[in-house]
Image (cartoon, rainbow, N blue to C red; front, side, top):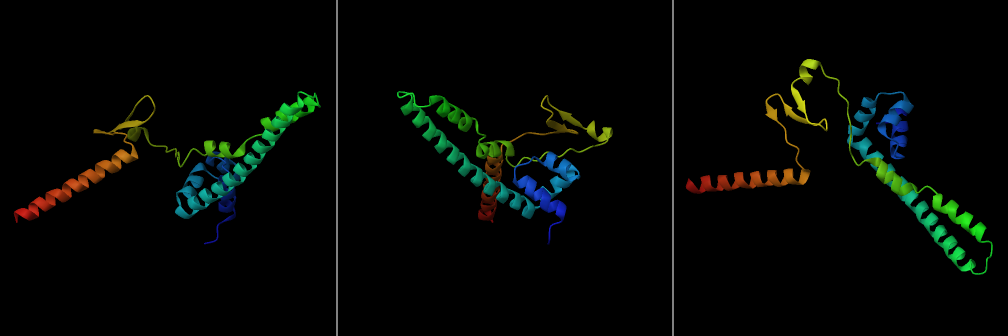
Length: 175
């Protein structure tokens, strides 16, 4: 399938680490449309690949800036005793040191794989939900909801599965 112009532009912007809200605004589409694109496995994989490539490129650039900074700092250190244009070296150090490090910023801004979707619901439905002070749903109707870490959930599922298998073995041994 050939991506539409909107999809390819969204892919490019998301791949650069642009937040989905800004991508939607720039392309004149809804946040929901960007969310739908990101929910497609192929599209999300392509975004992740572009982000990885950009991170590699930015990290390489950052390494070069770090190397330059080290050289300037070393030269500044050795030339201070001779007073060989220390102000020029200090200015160079200041410029290089102030250079934006892109690689780390991209990782920090990406937010991982979190997706926020806003859903407008009727008041009658909303009244069925109770939230805590962090606006997390803790009860839906009469059902209490519990937040659980993924690893803990997997451990519990595996434990339940093993328990059911053991019960099945015991039942088959009785027969």
